[in-house]
Image (cartoon, rainbow, N blue to C red; front, side):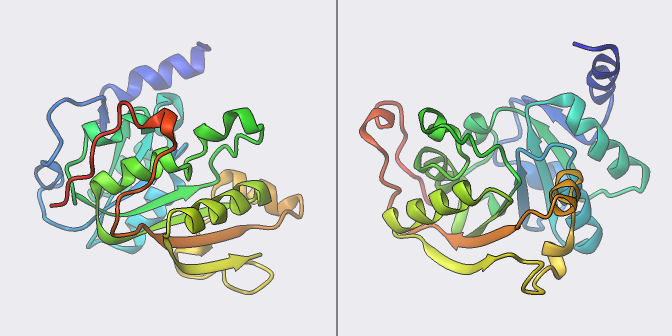
Length: 233
């Protein structure tokens, strides 16, 4: 680990708004935030630009940026501390461990912003809109909650639409080229560091928002062995 990364990694250990693999927050996020406001997750949040941006705009909601890389979390966590933004927290954990930290129905919305598209077919299982992840999200989301994906990857966008169709999800909004269509307003106007780079390179930005079905997500056979049935709150 580089010297700068090590400094940041050590620093977040002192930040009161960063929780690192906590063992006692499942079902208790209302105590962490000291209110009962709806909870929104930004998965694979990186520097947490969306958590910070949404937290600024919506004081009546709570936002949690989730990522395993502490040196990235540092940037957003520091901004949230300095402003301050008491409705913004960060959780350092693997996305695959998400059900260990949230109870059924504890989350009201999910944002997935420019995640790694894992373009090789052999790594498709790592895409955050793969059925195995949707199965996890279904265990923590309130029924009817929205999952938002914003990406510059046509491959990930097309893959997500295929999964949505296969799993009988409901598309709530589907925009190809949000800037070309003049749709970069509200939450979609928040730009991350990588988004600014993508726009400078002339890339198209895709957005799709969808709801999971009332029935349980259908997992491929190889993922069923350790899967838990979905609990409803």
